[in-house]
Image 1 (cartoon, one colour):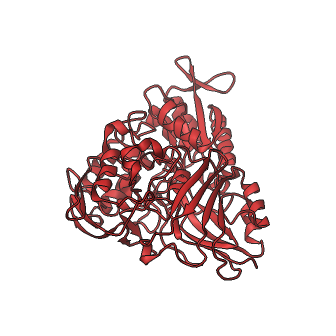
Image 2 (cartoon, one colour):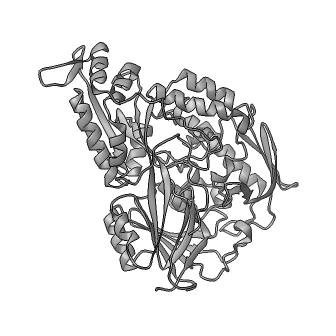
Image 3 (cartoon, helix red, strand yellow):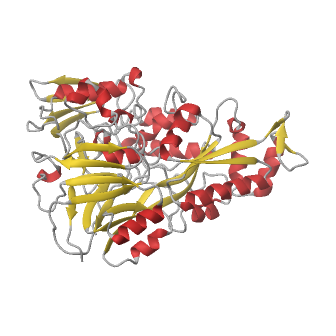
Length: 528
């Protein structure tokens, strides 16, 4: 199987973004032609408006129906998408659009459509969670329909201004004028159109026979391309594995112990890919114990991160060396030597010094308030994440902390992070391809007004990022790397492990990048 060379944007919250890249293909037979490709998704994607698509599962669904201005090629380089060429400057990029692209309702894609997408996301009234993440803060779009161009510009020079575009889905046709149709429908230029949405059960897509502008000139007339794609909501990985083995599913991404039996199953296509980082964040709101950096560092010292890494990844992970997935635009290890080391005794002493004293029940308190942490995590990331949450709770209990576990599905996780804020620590995978995609999550307006869900205010990180963003991509790399280390040294978030996932296929083959389908790569194959 071929490694497509890139993985991820926003992984769980997706902080886009857990992403898996690569090709999953079946070793059996040749092209079977037509038919239905059925793929398991771990939870319901929620609202399908691309401007609100922060969950990785949502973006997986959207990738069947939408295109982007540019794409990421197999070698990680930027290649044409809806745009056939572009002109890049430090503070702008001008795209010349293809002339043959139509929307699913038959209307022609125009530069005005593209500009409307970017400006809608950047409009504060839209409250788009991808603003400041996939669309840089302050970006504006101007269309020239006569010339067939659209220009995206930023108030100041912006690193990776071109590289930020391959993950922004472009709405066209009726969806531009009435975005309410996007809640449970699609309005894009992609090769498939959503025809049925049954929340928490399945989403059915029908092929567009007139699609001719796929990557490398791919069309929907390719032999073996399925006429329908069904995304079936299967929250339980054991169930998904059973359905794969029986042939009732053609594809799934598996995190946990069921990987072993899938890898051993005859006729199963499989590939293992990076899936973002496993780490936890501390809520630093004014009323939270982790507002105090001494408390955050003590809580981090109380954890044996090496043991936690093995537990969280069920032994299939790799040491975390940074927040951006390979192939990184900035190479380097930002983790080693920058995370508070495991020392349970020092952790206890630090909590004592911060005024949190153990009571008769062993739970620490300060000024009559108990040291309590609500630990939030997603239940759709395999049993390793549940075990990791239980490990954290046990370790912190030994340190005198009362921990309450709260496991939720992805859509509830997003609500808790961005709206209710009912958490103190969250286990949250990250899968991004550019350091700029993290800035909106790690600085700026705090939730619910902004994407900064954990209320971070790391002055050193913000200073380094501000300097890095003004420099061309590679010139700013030293600053980008240092900015990540600043977060770890301050225990704003704690990197634990680079997770991997198994992408498995039965009677089909397909490519994924950044957790997104390359729809024209899907092929039905004859059963072996």
